[in-house]
Image (cartoon, rainbow, N blue to C red; front, side, top):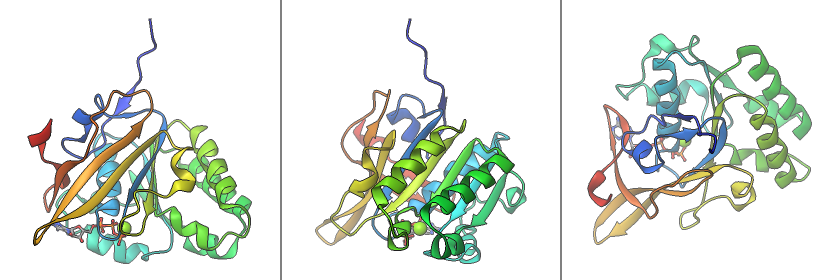
Length: 227
Ligand SMILES: Nc1ncnc2c1ncn2[C@@H]1O[C@H](COP(=O)(O)OP(=O)(O)OP(=O)(O)O)[C@@H](O)[C@H]1O
Ligand SMILES: [Mg+2]
């Protein structure tokens, strides 16, 4: 008999049903999309889902927006409960480390924090910014990062910024266990939002893009008309 894969809820209503019940545990996932598609919202909801169930979580912010700004915006969502801040969900700004340190040191900083907190859920938002600052090979850095994250018993969501029209950052796509795309498309005067599961190892998942809404109550919600 095959070993059953343990799954953890993604936190995004409708997504677990698309991926046989949830993200494989442990795993490293990439959530990719262009500006404003909902990557940070997705990542926050993923951690609040864990926190709600007593899991320990870390949100590493990188460079695109200081933690306080990010939290100020995220706090507009009803699911963001400041009760969890600094307890079940620890926010750590690694922007300075990314600017000032080499790739090996960045990996050591991450490892050190993870060893201290022992989380079941980790977010790094966005990972793609690291590419602008590390001097040596970006692909090697990403491969080492994913390998190290896989040593911990947790589910990690890395967010990836892409230019409009680009699907995902290609450097990281092969290293991760799963890829979720967030995107917009124009239909006449309307701009619609979609989610697509491009890859999820060990998982029979729905293919093709599905409509989503971003709501104040729950963040991203998959509209179930297509499956
Ligand atoms: N309270 C809210 N209710 C509904 N939709 C919201 C709310 N707040 C933000 N949004 C939507 O979510 C989008 C921003 O999502 P988010 O910040 O998660 O995107 P992102 O992909 O992380 O963007 P960036 O690449 O700029 O970091 C907004 O552009 C808006 O469309
Ligand atoms: Mg963001």
